[in-house]
Image (cartoon, rainbow, N blue to C red; front, side):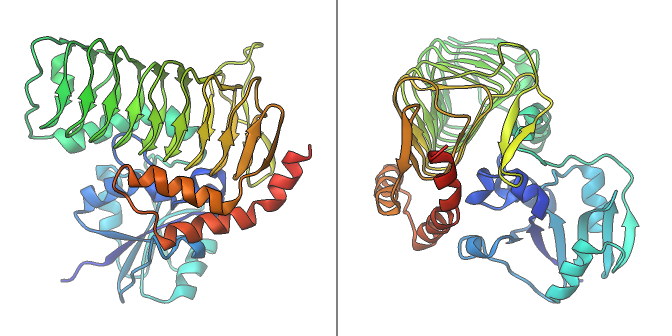
Length: 404
């Protein structure tokens, strides 16, 4: 019996709540824990997936269909019970919880797929009554990161033996520390008492680093001398981190290479935080933090007391930048200068507390190409088309915010 083609689909409301990170990627390509959501599903289902996402993203994230397709909600994180329920779906069945479609098995009829999303009773419905874990808001990425690290740690290390840590290190609860081949950890303290610590392939922890789990340092990434990490924190692949970091997620190919504090925050890909950049993660009145919500185009209450910086792909800030509690930065923004910039900085903004102008698309291409080639990655025509779409569709937002 042949297996169905697996497609991870964007749930529209969730996708909009996860902007600015979903400006440049499908929901399933968000990193939480050690792996992206897509990587978790591919590991558990032992298959390659494709994507149902926004039309402007499809050249980079194509949709591949057959006559037998298993559509899975791209905001869902898999675990054994849910995976078994989804794998057992018969053709024409939809798995639903509280009106939310979790998965469906259908043919290549696009109309049938869309009707099943909007009318869960359209196909044969099977209710799923066990807990599910969905990434629904940007703050879920850091607030649920500890749970996700522990699940991924089990995925990646089950039945395997860690590389031996160098004798210069101090390891606390070493059974919960896993070091991949090729990684270098020297003269550092790794404390896994509060959660697992995963050091990826060819990653480096330089001397004097202090790490408290849960923590994931993904492949080819590094902690610089004397870095202080409080979990749950993830540093995605090909990134460099220094200074002090608390309960944050860095997707990958980004740098926070110097002193400064990053807390309760999410940083996208190809970002750079200048030396001594700091963010506030707690209001002076200890009240709930509000964040800019792209769908509502207004501030939304997170319900959290600790909430920091959310920075979209290709954005950067200069040295000594100060970000206020609950700041949202779009894609391809460049922030610099003294004082606190506003709590919402639209995509393709250039400036700081003294005001912003538009960061022109051709200049953004030039910088992105220079940054990416340093990591032997090409800025493709598909990448440029995505950035151009974001530039064109966020123009009104920039005009409103820049003139405020």
